[in-house]
Amino acid sequence: MPPEYDLSTAASPAGLRLDTLVRLRWLAVIGQSVAVAGVHFGLGFSLPFGLCFLLIAVSAWLNIALRIRYPMSHRLSLWPATGLLAYDLTQLAGLLYLTGGLQNPFAILFLAPVLISATSLPPRVTMALGALSALYATALIFWRRPLPWTPGETLELPFVYIIGIWAAITLGIAFTAIYAWRVADEARSLAQALSATEFVLAREQHLTQLDGLAAAAAHELGTPLATITLVTKEMAREAPPDSPLAEDIALLREQVERCRGILGKLTSLGAGGDAGPLEQLTLSHLVEEVAGPQRPFGVPITVTRDGLDPEPVCRRNPGVIYGLGNIVDNAVDFARNAVAIEERWNDQFVEIVVRDDGPGFAPDVLLRIGEPYVTTRGAGQRHADEPASGLGLGLFIARSLIERTGAVITTSNAPPPATGAVITIRWPRPAFERDVGTG
Image (cartoon, rainbow, N blue to C red):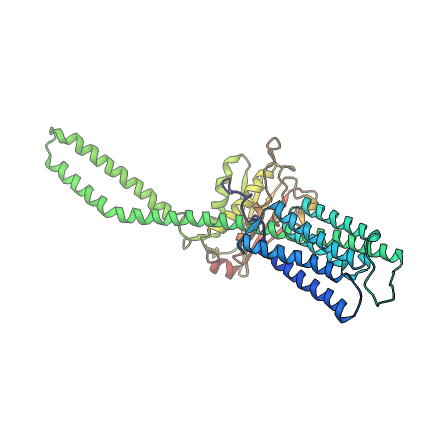
C-alpha cells in the first residue's frame, strides 16, 4: 500500500442516514396503524385501541420533528442512531405489551432494528441492541395484557410454546445480526480495497502522464535551445581570444550543453521504460522492468525463457507493471535464497511464473489469497525482526490490475520436498498482445 494512502477514510461509512430511519419508521407507523385498526374494527377483537394509537402517534410525531429539525441528507453519529433504534425497540415492546406479548405474531419484528444496526453500526452497538431486544422479549413472557381475541373468549397459549417463541426470536436476532454484519463488513472491506486500487492506478497513470509531459517539454524546448547554441558559437567565433567576454561565452556554451543533456534525459524518460501507455515492450523487457528494481536487495533473481520466436509484444500498462512488481517484491521478501521467474509462450498463451524458496502460503490463507485484507505478513518473511505492516491489499491490488487485461492468476505452493510459493499469471496470447494497456 502506498504510505500516503489513508485507509481509515477510504470508503468508510459516514454514518446512518436519518432519512433511511425516518422512512422505515413511517412504514412501521403505517403497518402498525393498519394492524391495530384491522384487529379492532375488522375482526372486532377487543384491545386498548387508544393506548395503542398513542404509542403509534409518538413515533409519527418523532418523525415529523426529525424532518423539521434536520435535512434529509443528514447522517447520524453513533449514539443518536443507537438511541433512535433503541426507541424503536421500546415502542414495539410497548405495543406488544398491550396486545398479548410474545403471543402476538408481530413479535418477530424485534429483529428489524437489530438488523439495521448490524448493517450500519459497530458490532458493540448491535450486541447492545440485541441484548435490549432479548430483555424486552423475556419481560413480555411474564408481563403483558391478554392477546386480543373474540369478546367473551380468552386465547392463552401454553407456556412451553411461548418459551419456544422466545427462543426463536432470540436465536433469530443473533443469527440475522451476525449474518448481516458479516455481509456488510465484507462489502465495506471490498469498497476500501477497491478505493485503494483506484488510488494506486491513478498514481501510476499520473506518473505516466508526467513522463509524456516531460518528453513533450523536451521536444518543445529543443528548438530555442538549438538557436541559443548557434548564437553562442557565432559569438565565440567573433570574440577575440583575449576578450573579457571569452570566459563568459565559454561558460554559456557549457551551460547550454548541460541543458541539452538534461533535455536528452527527459526525452529518453518519455520514450523509455516509464513512457506512455503506447510504448511497446517485449515479454522479456516487461519481466526485466519489474525484476530490475528488486535485484539490489540481496536475493538472486533468475529469469528463464521457454518459447519460440517471435517473442510476444505488449503495450506498456502501468497497472500490469505495478501488479507484477508487487508479486515479485513479495517473492523477494519471503525467499530464503533465490527467486525464479519463468517466461513461457506459444501461439495460444503467454505465461509468467514467479517462484520463491520461502515458507510458502499458509494452508488457512491459500484458498483466500487475493481477497482484500488476507495477509501473511509477519509469518515467515525474510526480515523477521521487522514489525508486520501488511494490510493484505498488495496481492488484491495486483490481481485486480492484472486480471483487467484478460489474465488469470493462480496461486499454489511448490510440491514437496521443495518449498515456496508459486504464482502463475497467464494471458491468452491475443489478449496479451492486443488488450494489455487498454483495459
